[in-house]
Amino acid sequence: MSGTSDYAVVYDITCDRERTRVDRVLKGFGFRVQKSVFECRLNRRGKEELVRKLEAVGVKTGFIKIYRLEYTFRGVVIGERKDKDVDDGNAFII
Image 1 (cartoon, one colour):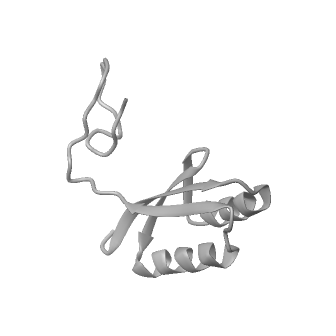
Image 2 (cartoon, one colour):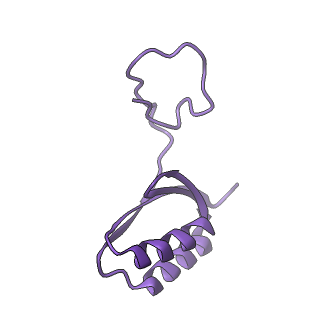
Image 3 (cartoon, helix red, strand yellow):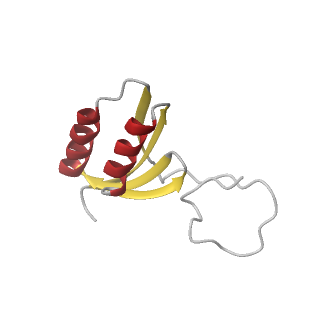
């Protein structure tokens, strides 16, 4: 997909209501990889829309960070792994 990038969106929010609202927004843009981490594939317009919707939540009890994922770096594998993985070159496996 031309013009799209992958993003990791992480949050640390203490208020259940705010956290639920953020979670609902993020489910519309990507998928959960950990309890408070989502991966999203977005074009410029999608990223702007995501930021706008997250800002509208008005988080006051924590923060949300959006990181652009860079796949040109070869990941480091620590531990034993026997077979190739779908994430080879695209994820750090610890």
